[in-house]
Length: 174
Image (cartoon, rainbow, N blue to C red; front, side, top):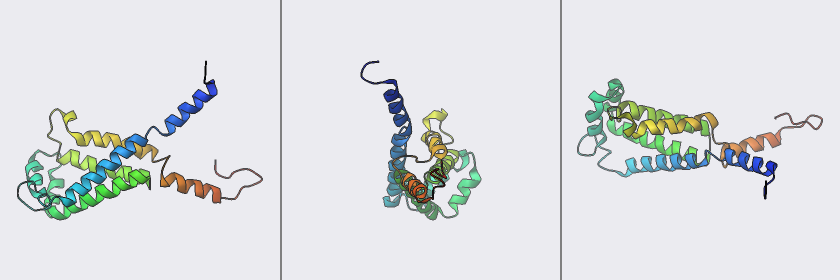
């Protein structure tokens, strides 16, 4: 090989693999923060009824959803549900972006996406036109891997590791 030794190439591949989920984290984090803020700032959305309201949306999807009881639960307080959903999206997005409790944030994003798929976009045909299923699948690698690089989780893990005592020159944490 010219230019790179095999060990250099292997190191480059390892570094690239460590950072592979970063674009997904940024995309999902920004998208969920934006979605939450969009809901909170849309006065038409935050109403029980009327064009563009959460109430109208819930009534429209109720009979075609996979779990009508879930929609019925949201319909008991549609504005409260919308505000909680928006706050959840913002928290999930921020947690994902900064990598704080990365797996928990990703699990929250997956649960939001799952609930939206089973209710709002369930009737979309063919299924791959519905974006909530795609978001659900996109969260799963982050649920499994967390936020291993460029994250507060990684920083905190390094600090915890550095704070642990050594035993005869051997690290207690691998």
